[in-house]
Length: 302
Length: 283
Image (cartoon, each protein chain N blue to C red):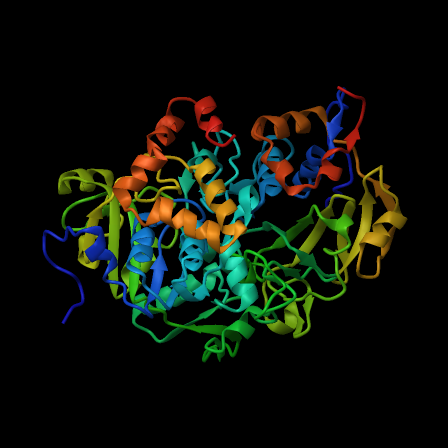
């Protein structure tokens, strides 16, 4: 029977949606770098105390680092975790790798894409260019090589990857789970089709007509649950709603760099009390000022 | 072959300029007109350089913005994070993630800018870990898609702003993330890689080209000498017989650097010592 999820009302609480993730699951995180990260779901997983997660994805930042800082992650299989030139190396990720507390199976954007595509296509593996001669494969005993039956060329080969749960954040969605995302989509579409369960937060639940008019990026039949979570990507950006919250990110990075006591203080202040308390504290409304003028937009990055 | 040390057409600058500005211009000059050019994330100098190239000597290059995969955008400004709407404003088109990586893997991207915490003489780079894996001394961020597309893109412009540290251009990498001309497992040809590999390595001290798959110093900034560069270089330094001083940036190039990057995000790549370097007549 088809695994598509049918039904016209998949609205859920944040707690029930996050509870789709079980201890030990492989979890795909949507968005990329510091944009459209599923932060409300990340914070809820921390509140629920999930453990032993394997996180997979492309280039990420505070989503992965916060999950590691709070002790939820045992395996990290991303292509990059960091705060770019702005705030530098990811403190908890770095500490986890250096201490051995987190197994870093560093991946590549192209490998991740290819593995998801294999899962989408229902084939056990796909060939991929590059990799041969490099050291990433030393972190991946499951990668191999394959000889083309037609040309005899030898290529790297990677197995299909179907994450247990994908966590996505979109600006708009309807009650059935149709999602509208503004570009860049990063790997969200691929995660949506390759994963066993897709859980989404949206800044606003609107009518189906409104989502269709904006454009459906991820269709309802692959989405299991949808949660209205205003500013659910904060402190990453989710345009056109809100820009990157640079002061908040700097506060997190400073706490994560300072060590466990500062991380605990951050979690107690911002994460544990819940999303309503979080929004009241971080006052994200100021981040919509980006649209008023280029000068106001630049000011958010000064 | 382009000579990146060569002066571009245009007025001689009347004002002074800084090392970060000149460095970006040196990167920009590695772009050839009518190329398809890409940079990765966390690469402000390369980001600014690609726009400078398009607005000066390479107007018909096709610029693909890293992380957003936007084609020929007109950024409001360069923000300090790569996946931001400010970078892809007014783009004629935004590629999907898979659309860009497919193009890069099959050979439809001509040049990529790539940096590394460590770089060896063959242009292999380490962006994964100092001290190696699985238990690194310093875990770096990671390589994005470089482990694949460094093998397939037409040419690579490598860069580092940390040459002087003596820890960046090394005899042996702690971890080989992105592929240069020759790896311990063989040459590109032996490994079946279709891209051309590193063509340039631009550092805050000078510019290298690659001859027979090995880096060779071809020009230097005027305030550093070859001995200084040799001391900072961990592999055996080969110097081109016609070693030159980098040609000065033009007024037009400097104006574009400043216009594209009003927040000065490019400066976050440099130490204070490098940022203090001044050239030309004082403003």
